Image 1 (tube, rainbow, N blue to C red):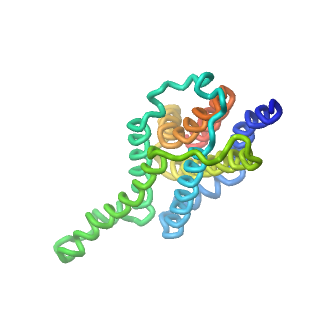
Image 2: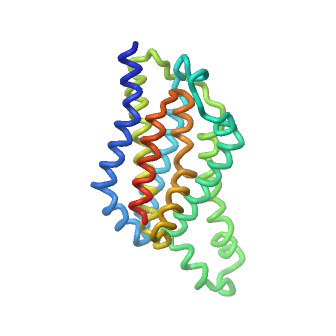
Image 3: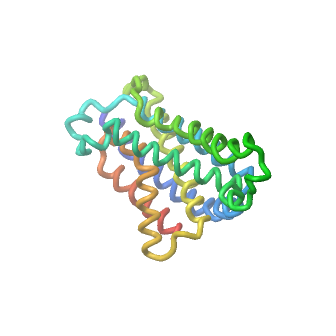
Length: 236
């Protein structure tokens, strides 16, 4: 049992180390890919969104450690439904903004002549299209904040493997998000790095919060913050 606990303590650090290695190997390629808006980028982002939602759901299905409630030092408000809903809405809106950028929407709204478009076309372009994307992205609110029944038992042989899988999938999404930020020339210098770090925390910290609420670990918190800091340094 003690060996199993030690191994589970190491898993987040391994996942974060893998995330850092993936950043070194893949980030330049991803940045170049997202720098030019294209339909294929929409598919990549949509796939990353599905993977991210799956990872968050998987982490939330994990059974907490027996002493999690006693050992955890997380403020109670961090895992409250309202907090998670606000963070999920922020993520969903940021995701839609980037999807629309890849569709070329933000460039086209300044050149589209609504006097030529009919009422239906104008409504579809300016209202229904973006609204449909926002509605789809808000599915993440349910994934992050809705009640979930714990089904992955601590004693299960698959527990460690599913923990590692969920953490790796989240870090993969962080890598994609970092590439998107770096492809947008808004984050420069120290202020840009700080802004990128804050944004990455707001968008991608919730899954690790849920994990830490189930398996409290100072090392897991520090290693993830270090990964986000390294990613934000790459952005700037």
